[in-house]
Image (cartoon, rainbow, N blue to C red; front, side, top):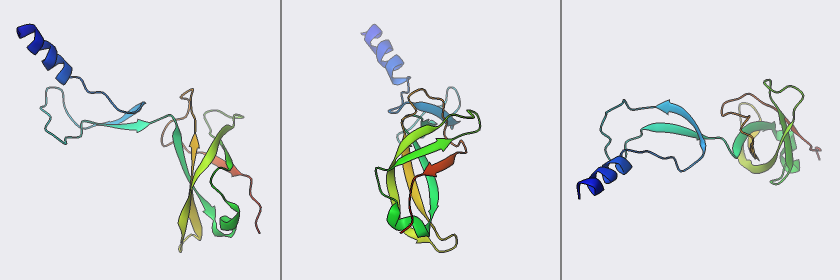
Length: 127
């Protein structure tokens, strides 16, 4: 019974994330007791990676979910990362006259990281 109790305590002491990613923030200290609903770590998913960007309103009619998006980032000059447009925002920002778009990049090799600045290319034609 003591061995079973020790195994259960060990299992209860291990935290696992439901997503693959990187730890962006640690909100607890070693030895601290966790209560229900306590956030111990903030994990940012890395694969697939969500790319959020804004598009000028004049292209609203030409942007569709499923379109191919290409992105370049400074750490990998000359390399294009390809993804698929997964969301086209429903409202236009009155201050910037742009709307939100989101793409998913597979990022299977894990080279891209959350928060990285990207230059986005989307093949669209204005009506």
